Length: 324
Ligand SMILES: Nc1nc2c(ncn2[C@@H]2O[C@H](COP(=O)(O)OP(=O)(O)OP(=O)(O)O)[C@@H](O)[C@H]2O)c(=O)[nH]1
Ligand SMILES: [Mg+2]
Image 1 (cartoon, rainbow, N blue to C red):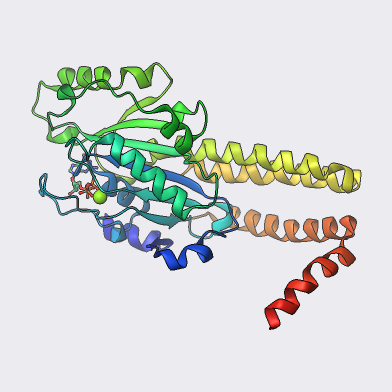
Image 2 (cartoon, rainbow, N blue to C red; image 1 turned 135 degrees about the horizontal axis):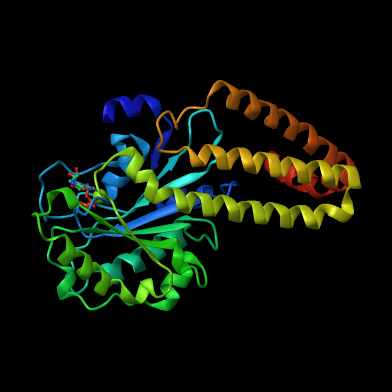
């Protein structure tokens, strides 16, 4: 399956950053959709990314490797888009983190702190994750030894935004390796560990058998919610623009936003389903048409905003400086 998928999803790329690349990296224009994963070593964080994207580049640890050092050595992100869709329309990043071993200084709380530092350092200011997967290998016996998970409020708020507990999902894996008859026990262990989070609308999911379909079942709600958030932000920007453009242009953009959002949601809804990763002919046609329409609309907006002189005035200094 893996190899076949690699053909289908060529659009995955990884990034490692050195501090001197920092400034160039802080400027990416499209706001991303970020899904981060934390968990115990070997719980299957990298594997989940691999299953969703169909790429081995995510560095999944070899089958059968047990609890030694984390296979993923440093926090790393992977940009992924759907073939045929431009990245700014589906700017998804997976953030893979090294697993912890539940030692006193290397546990779930430390992993969240490290993730927060990494995002502060390498992502645009105020970046929040749209999804945080808390991965756990159900075959280990760690949970009963742990107190109920009670995160530090300010860390979660920095990572996910205020009161966004529903952006965090507890995902249990390796169910197919569990000895028969232990399911109920394991479920009650999870319920106890995640009780405080559950009371705040955080979900729990089982990653039953690793597959693209099951991976997306878990990830899709994050992406869908991120898309809905994005629509809200776009409408807000449009409202700000309203008094500066004609009623006709405003209406056209409003209508365009609705149509493009509906299109994106349909595409996202198919992720992980059979043939869900390539656009069908009809979709390709609609997507190209939307793109064409957008370019024309934007030209109209620029014309109506009438900022030619201002643009020249404000950018000429910069251009002079660039030349020197
Ligand atoms: N996700 C997942 N992985 C499984 C399952 N069953 C077996 N695996 C294997 O478990 C291993 C998990 O490895 P990784 O995903 O690399 O581990 P990790 O969570 O990224 O942890 P690190 O080693 O700290 O990077 C892989 O060899 C998987 O193939 C399962 O049900 N779910
Ligand atoms: Mg890993």
